[in-house]
Image 1 (spheres, rainbow, N blue to C red):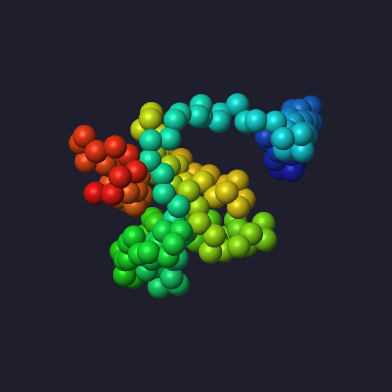
Image 2: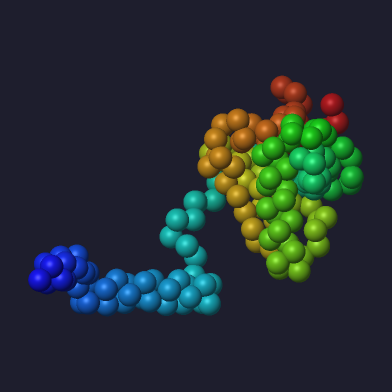
Length: 164
């Protein structure tokens, strides 16, 4: 006698089969569209417009297992060295880029390009894999950590490219 009310309650709480099928169809359709875009090389709609580069530097991030990191330029000259626990974001980005390179079979120690654009955006681009990160997305402090790796702007009145 008590089983019938419990059964009715369970029937009321059930999700209709039609709704479950619609959800499954939406998930499947999303996967098909994403696979099609990936296989055909379609440009993502959310890609930011390209702005002229105003400063750039080839860098190699050398994250250490203890949280320390070294950043060198393409010639191996030291740009930045931080001890354990002091290079959090830079070391984290270095580990992420190393992971992408490992998966893609790209050289782990090849330089990446850090670019500052006229619109103020700062990007790290890995030419080995096509991986790129918009550093603004991680907050001002983390963006500033990478901005400090760029070469200083030329002195007022001094043409670009002249030694200071």
